[in-house]
Image (tube, one colour):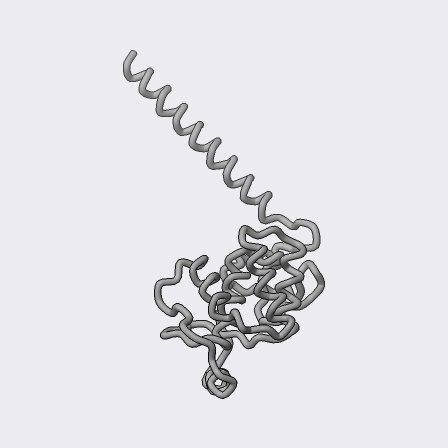
Length: 177
């Protein structure tokens, strides 16, 4: 009798685990199947993996030269703002860089319009002031995003002069986040 009971428990466990596995597999297939305006090759993690999709859902190409899923994730918004801020600030360490351009600022502002972010107000304040050519708060802008990203090395300590900024930009071999 004990052997029969053990056999039934084992079979029931196997069936239950199989059912759970099928449920998970089918659920993950549904999540990655084609959705509105995307194909399977368009789907990408916004952690930096490139995709073959040439445009975002807004119809604008990413001016950062990366092909990522949109709307951008909170992490991507932070990475782009943080990398652009390096052009304006003095810090012991800077590991990322993107040149600040109106096109990039407009792109990030458009992302704020099509998605909701935890720190949306902060991003908007930073980007609007930059759009207006006001970089006087670039130190606090950098450090606000740096803190959001749990930064521990590379706190901004000053603004670069025009000459220092030009030298920094010329020293960058490539743009990266």
